[in-house]
Image 1 (tube, rainbow, N blue to C red):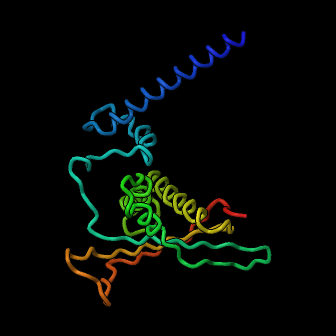
Image 2: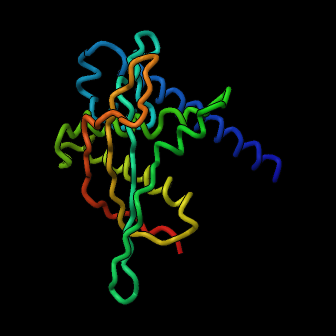
Image 3: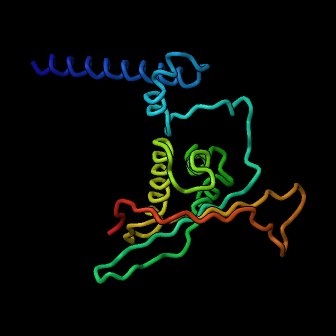
Length: 203
C-alpha cells in the first residue's frame, strides 16, 4: 500500500510539474509574441504571471548598457517601546552588489541585475512620481521595497526595523581614460523616495 501511495504521489507531482511548465511556456510565449487577440484578452493574467520574476526582453540581442552609475542607498527606522524613533545611517546597497561582482569570474545574476532591474522597472512604472497608479506599479514598488528590506536585514546584525527609505544618486559615467581626482562628477539626479512600511525585521 505504501509503495502504491508513493507511486501515486510521484505521478501527481510529475503531472503538476508538467502542467505548470506548459502554462509557464504558454504565458511567456504570449508575453513575447506580437500583440494578438489572445494576448490582449488575457493580458492581465499574462502580466500577473510574468512580472516581476519572469520578465522577458530583447536586450540579449540588442544590449542597452547603463550610461549612468547609480548608488542605491537605504536607511531604516524603528519605533521602540517608549515611542522613540530610531533612524539608521544610509547603507549603500549597490556597493554590496559591486563588491560581489568585482574580481569574480562567475558573478551571480542576483548580484548583477536584481536590484538594478528592480529600480529601472520602478522608474518605468512610476516616472518622476512615487505614487503607484496601476496594479503593476504597486507590484514593482513592493518588489523593490522587499529586495531592499531583505538586503538591509542581511547586513544590520539583526537590528529591528519597521520602515525603510531609499535614496538613489545617479552619476554620469566618466569618459575612458579620465579620473575623478579631487573633483568627482556631480550627480545628475538625487532622488529621495518616501518611507515605506515593511514587515518587521530583526529582533
